[in-house]
Image 1 (cartoon, rainbow, N blue to C red):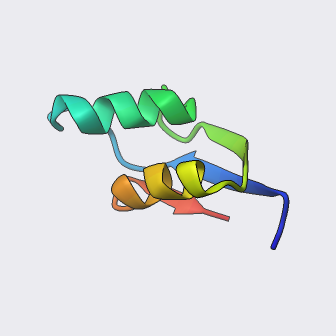
Image 2: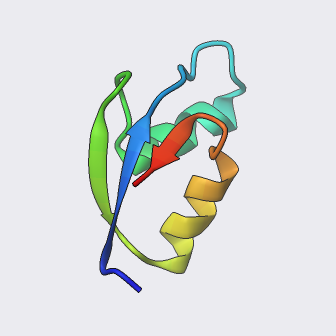
Length: 58
């Protein structure tokens, strides 16, 4: 497995419930089309799976 994962916000968190918005913020995704590189840990993987319909992994 790779050491890092690139995650890009492709759909807005506006209109989503508070937990979804907080998860995006925890991942460091604050603006549309922002890409962050995160460590590949089980906690980060869980957060990504929770907001998978809003982000692109690559």
